[in-house]
Length: 576
Image (cartoon, rainbow, N blue to C red; front, side):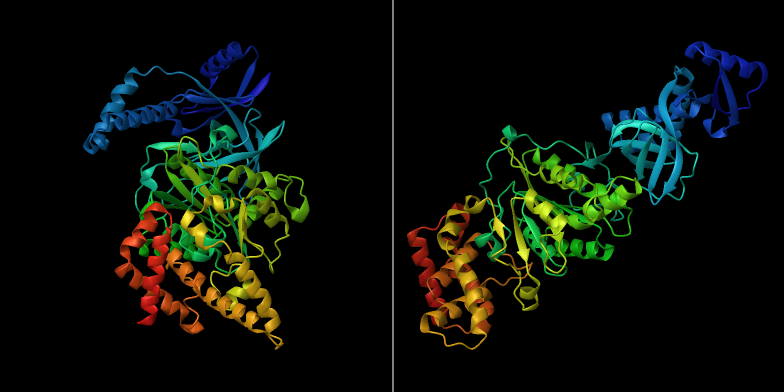
């Protein structure tokens, strides 16, 4: 005899209970004994729980299905909102329930054994898949991450206060997904697609948050530049469309500022942006949103936020949800820039989840698959042969400049280069605080315009030589004239490369600044006035040399005549 549970809308006893037990016994081929509980929320009918299966023959389940079918019909027909008024819906619902053919919904179910810090241990659901959405009822959902022979370990997207031991869990048979499309542009959402900006949101299409990366045959070479508008990066550490360039450095060294500058520079381009805030303070996300709004870049940006006070599962799923949104644009032929801020907190959230799921820990208590955690995310960034690309700028925070720590070395080995920001340079007022010795782009000059290649060839070497020489010059040693000339040019180059995140430059402006440096036209300008002179010079060139500047921006090339024109006007400006 098999003991089972029967939830009924009305009390069942005597001959009626015996008839139901006989019906299930004949269907399953064994004797069934029900423990009956009354559940008025079922409206009518009953729900049987037998050997890990739910046999749902309740009126409530069928009413929900009718409601879902009705809503889908309204969306497909694009009916006016007036048709969906409650009174009309109720009459339609009554008419359809009279003719509905009831059928039994058979689903797997499990029982909650323990709940601890948004991690749930479940007995049953042996047929669940990794990453499957689990329904805990009352709008609570979780994600299956630990599969065992006798049960499942899952994480909750909502709080665990309302989930108690003994609660029933259903498998949905589908993976976690998120709404995608242009409806999200200019919006702030959480990783499960709910709006955080106080406005209603309705999307038409959905994508699973976890997708396989494009195959090698689907990719094309990274040879088209994605300009950040920052002279130091576009000239020395170029980023291409489809590249994965890591931004790494200590806390408060300007990592997010570089990412925001790159996003702001895309406001006039045909490029969408996705910003994933992982474990950031809500006030920080609000500041980022306001910065993008003030710069006119928010209308082409989607912000996915899993704040520091959100649960670890939400922080875990946030970058994958942002990548799914970006993939929708990419597969429609658009270029996308996505920022993960930051993957250090993402790894920490995954570590806390894994420890609570009782997975074996390795170095620094991280689970063994922490490398796969980020590789399967960053490999989804690509430039497709069919058009469209995702350029990823992951951010990783270091401690005391240690880039040999576990997570930094993992992400460095996955990405196509890194932009390393140094605390000493930042504190000295050099911003962006770029360390040219440790920063590299493995795509190289293949992702640069010909004009930028012509004027930035020896820039890294000159800056590195200046910083090495400046260290020895601090000791007051005798310096010859050639070394003094190197120091003078290096001081001016350092000032020329200083830039605020909202002061982005076009290609022609960057080329003009580097032409002035190459021709040594700023030698007689005092170092403290370089930044002011640079701004005034660019305004002068925009007014009096606009044709040449537009030609450089349009063609991406710097001809000999264009160079001579720029030199002539720069000399004219400096003489005035």
